[in-house]
Image (cartoon, one colour):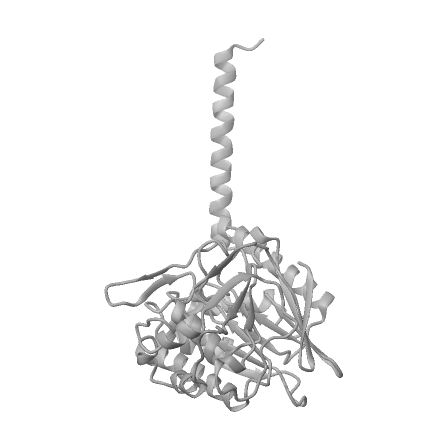
Length: 387
């Protein structure tokens, strides 16, 4: 039998030898520039995402694809590294020539805080670089344009609505938001509006995994935020009256339902509300109080209604039905969340259908005047709160 001391020496030599061998392998790999530890991590990540996107694309055959933001961290990287990550993204999503995504396929990219930064970080240069390769940060388009009530898709830069380092970036976001509001009022809210936001609307603690939180620096610029501020969330509900809101940001996903008024004891001048929606953005927060009192917002778990708000030129809130807006925060596609993705389907009662692949699990359908909206949804929480 070998002496214990000899066995210990052999064990020590074996461990040291293994460590040296590993070090030499990594050095050789680094020299060859193809197999560092981080390389293996990126290699697995890219192949996992490519497999997920390719499989879901072939199985669901969507008409459009929408990436929900935070595509890759690029606030403070060089142009060379940005180009490298862009190539990786195109490969993982099948956008290279001859790959699984057809040339010219309608693919849209919502900007997130990792893409252009929060209000403190966003610069016009970052926005310009993003828009060059990923599309506009504020954008809208119509689905099934030949339909008399064609649904409108709106993509909004939410990272710069509350407080922003550069006034020009914030002003662009608000100008676009108020333009959409003006169009909604002009068409009497008769067209379904699908609103895509990276940062979710405000919700009280307990409804979603992330609690409401906004951190600012001494110049009142946003350092980070989990949700939009309450008053901006109300502005979106009051002035856009979206049919459904789809958001990202919270990796865990969430589904909620915003209910807006009416209150029997109070009425509201809809002309005054319309004027407020188009007022100077710097005065909006101070002028919201009368509408908050008349239009309280209750948020609950999502129980889709069969009759979302669709009326024409109401004179007061008494003439309106209760506004019910579902909000789906799409769960992350990352490996920790099993490659989650979602499918949102727009179905004309008489005519074609369109499907938006979202990069939730029970199939829900609720009709609105000539349309059916179906979505795969996530998580369920039985909590009801007012804000």
